[in-house]
Length: 432
Image 1 (cartoon, rainbow, N blue to C red):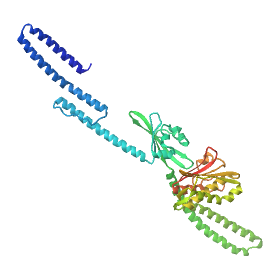
Image 2 (cartoon, one colour; image 1 turned 90 degrees about the horizontal axis):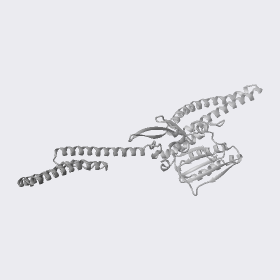
Image 3 (cartoon, one colour; image 1 turned 45 degrees about the horizontal axis):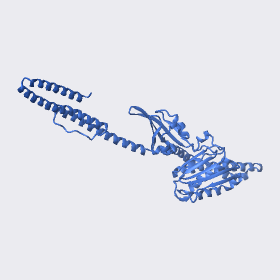
Image 4 (cartoon, one colour; image 1 turned 90 degrees about the vertical axis):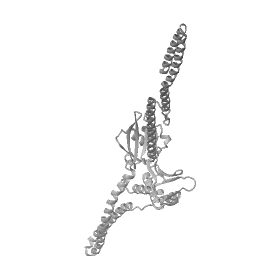
């Protein structure tokens, strides 16, 4: 039973009793009856007025409660010139002002945070209470190479490829390095926050590839420049001295001249080979910035194939073409990309050895080149070290070819990968 109903019942009961008493007075004293009736009417009027004053705070409280329940913080009450009521109205109005200002501040902070997340170069995965991906910013979709709509609702551990394995073993507040395709390096970090009293997790993905490559290049550039300077200066002087020794050959005995000349020639040849070896490293360091112009990638691919035609015929390797219709125009440095494609083709032929196939495929949307070969699959331990400077599995390899390809493509801003796919073919993919 509400307080208002109790008050009404009390007022009705009291005035009913007064009416009965007045009726008893009527039998004995008419004058008193008239006076009692007047008092009864005055009491009823005062009771009604008191009821209105009594109920008004409850009406105010009910209206304020409904406004707060509806999250309408713009409703305020006007003072009614009653001290108790005005105090209550003043407290309510101050509370509503504070709630409205707090909501505005929270909305502004939420809006700012949402924009920061969307513009962040780091990938951010926000998980729901069940550990599933609830929202993804554009950087995360780019790093994971999956549309945001596909990622939402998935468990991070169920993501395809190495990402699922890495994120599935991720522990809170313990950053973990993730390496993909032998070159792409990332750092994954998981943490949590409180949302309405419950713990929720989020994952931050940072790309480290460019920083690592930049640091590596700065380190080996200094070393190669110093080595190139010292070796070239020394070899030039040594070869000059060795060549001058040929003039002393006639002064030797006839039976010693052949051995003497052969020793000098071997020394000069080895010095020249050493100079060429150092020059290959110096060429990697002196890679100029690209001078892009719009060219047809199909023509570059065909010219590369012509350069490798003789080797392909000797090895009995067949080329298969699956090019998209029409030209594939891309803005790039022709000489540099032709050098990269030539190295990719040579690596494919060397991986096959003999009696194999090379497939060249292109797509227009997005512009992509895929060069596949049916040689042996890339072992996992080799996959992790691909594109590492000067790493090579060849007996006489210097590890320059893939490093040069990497630097050329990175300077152009092209995405690329080298891996053995599900069909068993090893594919080098370039996305322009």
